[in-house]
Image (cartoon, rainbow, N blue to C red; front, side, top):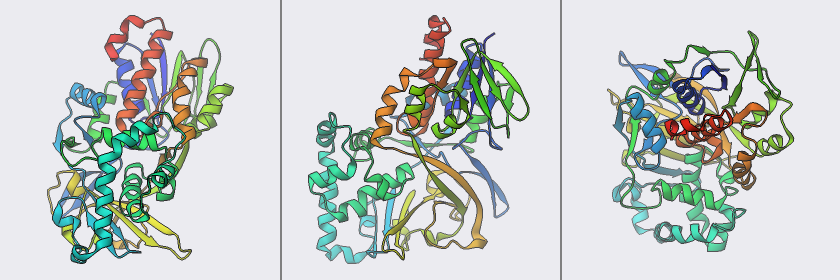
Amino acid sequence: MKKVAIIGSGISGTSAAYYLNKLGYNVSVFEAGNYFGGHTNTIEVEILGKIVPIDTGFLVHNDRTYPNLIDFFDELKIETHQSEMSFSVMRKTDNLIWAGNNLFSVFAQYKNLFNLRFYKFLREVLHFNKNSKNYLLESEGRLALTLGEMLKEKGYSKDFQSWYLLPMGGCIWSSPTNEMLEFPANTFLRFCMNHGLLQISDRPEWKTVVNGCVTYVVKALSTIDKKYLNEPVLEVVSDEKQVTIVTRHRKEDFDYCIMCTHPPDSLKIFKGVGPKAKELLSKFKYQKNIAVVHLDESVLPKKKIAWAAWNYLSVKTDDVNEAVSVSYLINKLQPLPFENSVIVTLNPVTEIDKTKIIREIKYEHPLFSTEAILAQEKMIQVQGKQRVYFSGAWMRYGFHEDGILSSKNVIKKLLVDDGRSSDLIKVL
């Protein structure tokens, strides 16, 4: 039985381990952290005497653009619950609050009923959403075109950028708005259109996992005997015949290795990585973020009618720049048995009541650039070289569907390399 080492237990590592084990490989999973799941991080919160699982990273998926994840959940018999994808913006610099839940939330501030500037902004939103398909077609041959360049070319105002598009992008990719201006326009438009974010009707149905997303991690890894927590891989050494994994506790040889880690981490531990793989992996950068789980409603819009699943907040800093954060109102995303607001705020820009903080968690999210998008297309050239494969959500848009799709593609390549192409049908 061939041995495969999987480094990292996010969606890419967990799904790779599950499918390879099902295909008869001897799988070992190495996780540097103290829990399996990566960005699938469910914690237990006690409120009013009730202990409830709260998701702090991966939260929702939809019925249209997550086909591989849905197949995975169906196979594991994971129960889901209806969720939502609503969005609010609170900009203290402009004294602006609005949300896209309904007409009443759009005009959560009554003053905007008589504000011509606000109506111009709304017209731009409708114009952009109506023309986004054309913009996508125009950007097909211009992969180096950034979102900021496209907005300038099309003449969109600062209000449209600051009040709508950049906050939405920043919430989706957990990225500062200035970084969103450097985001590849084609990738941004394709993702938003695929996920129904730029249309009024016929939007996909969003869902969350009952009892927390960790449910799928537990089930998928229950069949894996060799899984190691708190055991970071220090070195990956490869030759033509085997791959050697070195940790503090063991040094073991494998037939293959799948690195389900962030590219900067892969470069640190993969000793003797080939020049082409090194060049491509170096194109992927990451942003460190802090997620604060808390009960402080001050980070939400003042009027409840504007409360949404995702709540964007912008404040001016001392250097005239802006600091931004996003707060996920878990009550709108997961079925909770109480009315108390449970919130996960990413990179808070206002002070959160310390007595209401439950936990602080460190995450890293990919920063997509033109260089990274172009490198994604070339990663196939290095897959399986030196018996090492690379998988992760960073190979596409950065989300769960992308992570599991990446691992499926890697497994297909591994099966061919291992002379088992007849088994491809089992992972399609």
